[in-house]
Every structure is written in structure tokens, then in C-alpha cells.
Image (tube, rainbow, N blue to C red; front, side):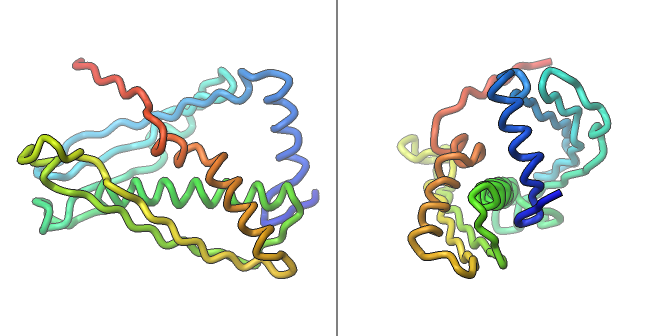
Length: 183
């Protein structure tokens, strides 16, 4: 097994070929169930993952995620805030995308670090100004990439690939339908 950046190159190539041959193999559905825990607190557990049309229930309640808000934002600061989870989701997706695309190009990473910031204007959340969106106004990502023997231009091309192929970034920059139903 040949690995680059702890990515199995053959598994990556096999996955790409399988998805090209059968697009259904590239379809995945993530799920999560959460319960309010008073105040701004939520306790959630991962649900089944459906990948390639196959349901994998081994992830049901395997991981627990807790959220709250900082005291300054009406919470009790007992857990990560939803906005921080959003930044984590983007950072995690950048990590997967950067490592995989670097590996597929034979670029060995000695390491990388991400610094993320997201701005929110509470007037949107509180409904005090109808012209202000309740969501994050801007997210800034600063990448520190250590790839010995790689030119800055190659790293910039890699970052462009990350911006183009990161599913979470794509979700954030393009409208996505969110369907809410009452059970």
C-alpha cells in the first residue's frame, strides 16, 4: 500500500473509478439527532450513514456532539457554539480535501494549520434589523501549508482545488435547500 499524507493512493484511485463507473456509489447521506437540554444547549448523536445506497447503522449514536453559546450570546458556555461547529466543519472538510488532492498529485505535506474566523451580526438573529442576515456575514480561512519541495504556485493551485472541491465550502457559498418539517 502506497500512502501520501496518510492517504491510501490506490484506495483514492479505486474510489474515483468506482464513482465514475457508478454515480450512485458517490452518493452519501449523513444524519444526526439532537435533543434540547435547556437554555441554548443541544445534545446530539450521529445517525446512520447511507453511502452508495447502503445504510451503515454502526455510526448511530457513536459520536456525541454538544453545543451551547458563550455567556455573551445568551448561553452558559458549556460546549462549542454552533458557529464554531460550522467553522470546524469547514476546517475539517478543507483538511480532507487538501490532504487527498495533495496526495493524488504526489505532493507530500509536512503539515498544515488552518485559522478560521466568522463574523455574525446579532441584529439578524434578534430580528431588530430586517436588512441584516442572521447568518455569518463572512468567513475567513488562513492556511499555513508546509510542503517541502513544492513551489508557492503549486500550493496556490492546491488551495484553488480545495476551494473548488470542498463539499462544505460549496455548501456555504451556494444556496442549499433546507427543508424543515414539524413531526
